[in-house]
Length: 372
Image (cartoon, rainbow, N blue to C red; front, side, top):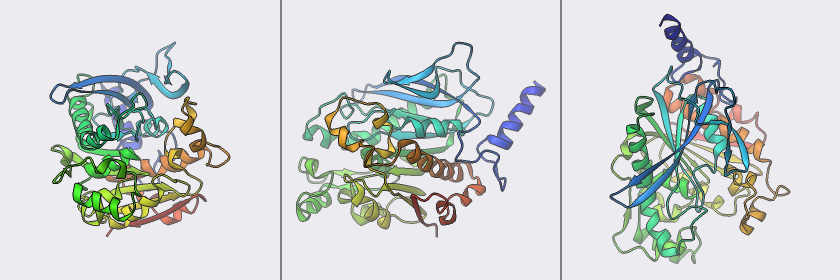
């Protein structure tokens, strides 16, 4: 018992969420001290008749002899161990929910999710039914999924908190939300942003249909409003990667975000890249922005590693155009980990990483913030 207590003190003091040392033993740019476990859990929402096949990364115990590392989509070996036992010595851990992109998949950004888990977070990413790589939904169906996605996240979060293996391992007072592209939009909604049919339709009409949401908003009915669903009030910080949907929110809708938010974008993103700056400008403080030179829309995912037989990805993953994936995640991981450790764990030392001077050590990164 004494040895166990000493181990808990050491883990919490040197590696765990909440440390306040000036020079952290566990810098956010390094893969953390926790071994990472991984498993899938399938939840089903009977009220909405929707499934939520969910990828979960978590601090895990030392893998037993013969333990296998996870093979994402059976083609790419990750750093996490499949079905490893949860390391509950330093529990409860902060939770980060992750929302994948348009026709993406929960494991699409596994490098980031593994990195956060190694730093002492539980990360959960459900597949958004009807909008995954396995789906071919019509524009009308996607228009409805806009409203379903935030509820998917809340439902999955609630189910995970009640799950026998994770109920006591999650700190309900330290929960964040992250997402990419369509998931970045979902993140903005869960952070407090609101959008409505009239604003979105007027924007698309005025812009000649420019905007990632324009193919869908004509299916919205007058009076339709996208707003945070019940339960979203638990989120304390948000990370939005290459988000779209500025025209659906407008400045007024984005001004309702009510938590610290970090937004990242790439200068070679020809899908949502032009929306990053107006979204950031409309957000209230505290807010952070990281622009990555050489990053495209898929640079915030591991999709290009998976060599999927999707013709549209060939150009979006062209290594002669876009930066190396490993380098992209070196930048994404350090800022994401520092941000969530600062906002969910209260680690004041992370402020040194959320700073233009640190960003200057990463030639591809440009950092800006407004914390007043």
